[in-house]
Image (cartoon, rainbow, N blue to C red):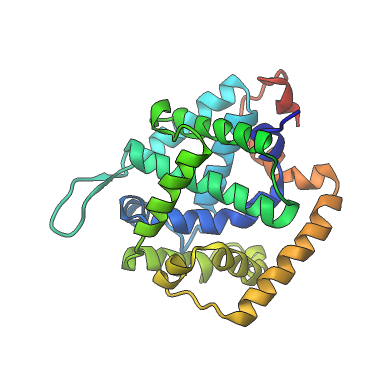
Length: 268
């Protein structure tokens, strides 16, 4: 039986791509300028990640009340993130459907990229089901269902076109510096930052990496490949409660959480 997002999305190793997804998002100025003006990566670098994770986990695994709660929270957070176009900026609006499409696209492509690096290839049936499932992350907000590319081939065309157009500007580069080289934030995160930087930079498209001004050379590439091989050997052997801990933690923070979950796979 083909697996889908509900079977794969709980894997904590997908968090290895969190930095990549964020940088791909902010490389689009429609998103990057809004994030620069309304998010604080210096003092609270983990906030956007935790908020995004909580939303995604709730949409995939949560109860009806949890889904309603995260939708309200995201819409409240998005409400002030808007600016009309002027001489210095094309403007931005967090409710813009095309911007939301790009955010979901980065989450989907990054999840597939990490999964294939660490856990191997995904069969076509599973990939198709996972792709269809990811649309729900956007359509639960303001993304019309018809805007999600019809199939994986259509998505690949959209993805390649969007990635080719990315040119990180100074606002995006500042976000990248704050994210990858935090001067403040939780002390426990600091020892993990070299690994987070390696994985983030290693999975970025080359021209995007260069646009952010991120250092990368043959030694980095070798270290990246060794790290991915090690993850591929170690991660699948971890107990499920450890592999799924981020999902269980984020859902546990949401209240109320009735015992009956929507859909059989949501007990994963």
